[in-house]
Length: 306
Ligand code: PBG
Picture (cartoon, rainbow, N blue to C red):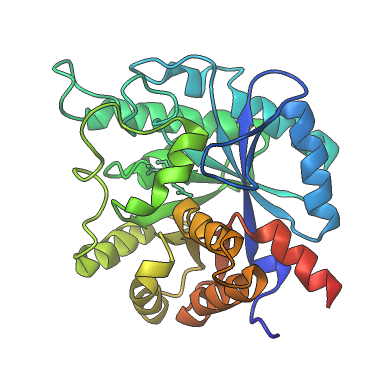
């Protein structure tokens, strides 16, 4: 069975929780866990042995605040994890998700205005910049803003440059759709909005034009890598972005897309490996250079066996 990707093209996501010796299963997210930092290091070693060298980190804080302050506190969970990973492994490319939704009491990706209804873009950009800076200062190689806040890439670029982190790359979650496919992830990060939804700031799935405009905007603002998310229902966007832009292009094969495959395989509807190879190959064929996928460890094992 052939596949048109290599291990270098894959990015493996990790969820990090407080505590020690913890590896906790997540509801409706088979095969994905929340790791305490000590346990995380062990799993990264496995991933590395399998030949996957790129990881994307998501933090789950102990306490949430309306202004997401636990996301940018000096000792925030992601910053601590990054430091440890850097100490232990030199050859891992560490990417960090930069967003507020796992850290806010209301579960939105933004700081809200006093009336708690509308996002406060200025405060959101300040928070995102502080988060990105804390990750970069700890040694993150790439920061990945995913809040869909206007000008988030330029705000972060400016903060990083000012603080002498010119080499830290920015991967924009440029075209991020308001999707039904994020369910398992929201269980993992406990980041579902407590009221309302993300349609005011994530893209309408009918609007391909807006998605391409967002990608162009991120490039103008200084993104090093741009992203389309989710992947599978949006292959047309990936393809068009590939044709229009020469920037490295990532696609996020999101939690719901992953869970589909897992549950279907359990039911005997399809062969998991064949299905994963078909899906990832299609994302690649559409034009993605990099694929963020929870299947990465499995794929590496399958590739090894051949
Ligand atoms: C945070 C964020 C989300 C995902 C990645 N970053 C969820 C959301 O927007 O609600 C989803 C990833 C997945 O489903 O695997 N803004």
